[in-house]
Length: 180
Length: 201
Image (tube, rainbow over all chains, first blue to last red; front, side, top):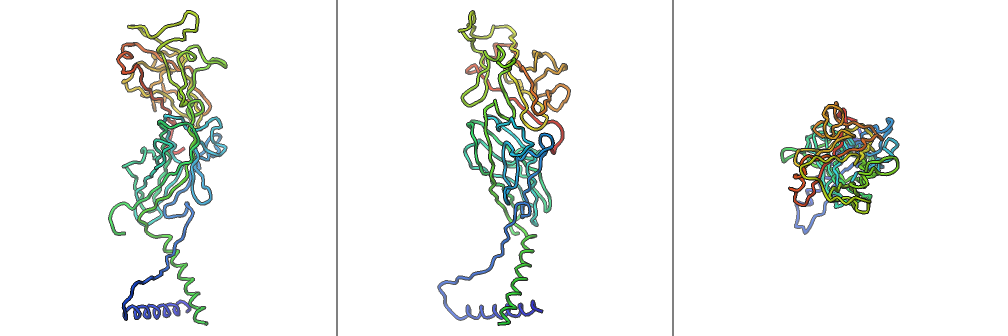
C-alpha cells in the first residue's frame, strides 16, 4: 500500500522535471542523482579476499595473511604463533614464494582476470603467485563464484636488509567484451 | 505532511532493494591496495638460513677460510687464496689438472614452517659441484646429492623439517680450468628450497 503511493509520487516528480527542461535555455544543469554504494569488508565484497589460515608449526596459524579491520594484510614473517620464531624474514638476493595466503573469489556476475601491480622500490618485485607460477601476463580468469588461492612472490634481488611497508595492488578486471 | 512521511518510508524500502541489487551486481574492475609488511634479512636470519658450517661453537676451518659474508648479508665463497697470517699458509689458488675438494663449507637451516627440499640449481653452466655432508659429489644413491635435479624424487633429495639443517655442504671441482675461463674468475650459484608434499599447506 505504501509502495504504491510512492510510485505515484515519483511519477509526478519526473513529469514536473521534464516540463522545466522543455521550456528554456540554460547555462548549466547540476543534477544530483543518488548513487547507492555499499562498502563491504573484503570477505564479502565483489572481489572477495579472505586470508587462508595456513597452519604453521604445531598446527598454529602463521599469521602471514590477516584481516586487519576490514582489509586483508600480509606480514612476512607472520605474526602468529605458527611462524618459525627463528625466521627474521626473507633473504636478500633471493626469490621467495609464499603460496596459499589468500582466497580470491569472484562474487560479481562476470568472469574476471586477476593480477597485481607493485610500484614500490624497496623490492625488485612483489606480485601475486599461484601454484601455476607468478602472475604476470598469464592472468588467471575467475568465473562467477569461482575462487583461487594466491600467495606472494617476493624478489629481493639488490634489495638491502630492512623492514618494509609495501603496497600491493590486487586487480580484478572483467575479461572479454566491452559492454557490461 | 502525511504524504511526505509515506514517501520517506517508500525511499527506505527502495534503498534497501537497491543495496541488495548492488550486492549481486556486475563490476568492470576492482583495484584494491593492500599492505604488505616484509622484513628482508641477511642469509643468517632468513627463512632459508645459509651460514658458514659450524663445528661446535666456531666455524669449521674450511668455513673460516673460504666462506665470507658480504656487506649485503649474503654469504659468498672465495677460493682465490688462503690466509697468509696462518703459519705456512699462503696458497693462491687451485692446482691445475687436479680434483680439489672442500668439505664443511655451509650449513642450510630450515627456518620456515614446513618440510623443504634443499639443493643447488646446477644446470651444468658453472664449474664444480656442491654436495651434502661427506659425499664429495660421488653419490646419487647414498643420500649425499645436493643437486636440484633430484627435487621431487624423494629418494636422494635432502629433506629437512622446520628447525632442521643440512650441515657441512661442501664443494668440489674436477676441472679447475673451468674457473680460469670465467670472466672475472667468479660465478653465481643458486640455492633452492621447495616445500615438499601437496598443494595446499
